[in-house]
Length: 234
Image (cartoon, rainbow, N blue to C red; front, side):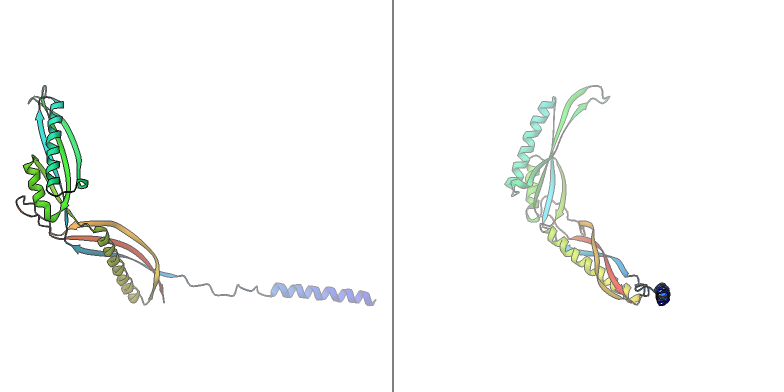
């Protein structure tokens, strides 16, 4: 009889314990859900204004002859003379390049008969602003009958672009700070940053090509753009 009562009591205690375990809330579910993080994303624009110190030109020589081989041969000699002239005017050999060669037939007015050929060669020369006028004069005197340029640039353009990037990041931070203040937030750290665009020298005051005088460089503006995301707190 005592054994029977002991077994019955044990069964009752086990049942009560199980019920209490089910009713007890699980740990961890009572924690508050974290507030969503806040971010501010802005774009920044930076510029650096500089004076160009380099200029490049395209010098074209065109010759005509009754045969294609004759036109090409004479044109090659004329182009070589122009290349040699700009080198003698102070352009380094590494900065003189043949950029284009063309040959086209010349026909009668009705287009039915070929009466000759026109050959053309373009020599590209890169030089300093100080030597630009003398280089153009030398090319023309050597036989160049077509000129394009000047294309103005800076020899340290990469470094100036990095300066423009720094200015763009500073601009982005100023904008993000203004937005945070307007929204009643505190600006935090940078979460991501991306470069936009590329180094783009923009002529601010184009130089003029007066072949009897020095090339006027004017100024150029190098630009950079970035997109920056900041964290923000209430």
